[in-house]
Length: 74
Length: 246
Image (cartoon, rainbow over all chains, first blue to last red; front, side, top):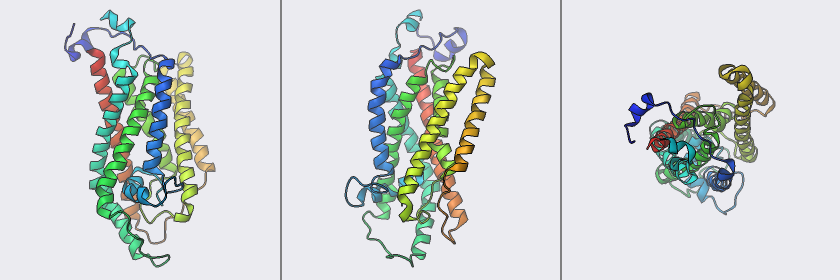
């Protein structure tokens, strides 16, 4: 059963990959995409073009990351 | 072994895919940070030096909310780290959609391809039109339009890459894989060439800003993203392939 992975790669023809049903992915996709986009917004844009929190702390704290990751900073 | 085919593999549950995506994203962010410190930060420093030397217009020195030291260390680590986790999680979702739907590609190859396409969509397309800019290059008054244009270009990158993949899948049965990929890439390039021509130009670089700093900064930024996405794709692929074979 548990042969080494490298040996198995050559020896046995592998079964075709089985896709994951879309209905199983969608709830995760919505949740992760929303969370991910919120994170990216705070890293990349908050207190720049738009400001949800007052002040400039988020902008200044993430300043170098914004510039280097390619977001417009100021 | 045959049992693995019929039942959904535990290696392919959304839980394990997301976990691997976020882990690989953190690893990618860690390596990108190394690139940032070696190649990026010196150029940020040069740009700030230029900014301070030319601070004749405007209020001069701003009140320092966060010190440069914190910006370079904790701030940068936090920003790049969160970015890596977010991109890794979204990558895992994209992988879940792609796996088993891109011909006969297995986990490792699917991960590599999704990472390549993700890099082209999220970094390549926006970078070619609105490249990263160091401090002192952007005009603060246009931050609103620049931000909108940048995220718009990310959306265009994602839409055209997804479009190209869908087109490729449609064309493959009729023209064969090689021709279908070639035609899709040509269509992708043509659509983006037209969009690049009709979208507004980026802001002009301030007079006298050192071209070398700008170039080196942009290459460092591109390098960070390349390292992040490459690590993400290869590490995620390796972990998933290993789990599938277990």
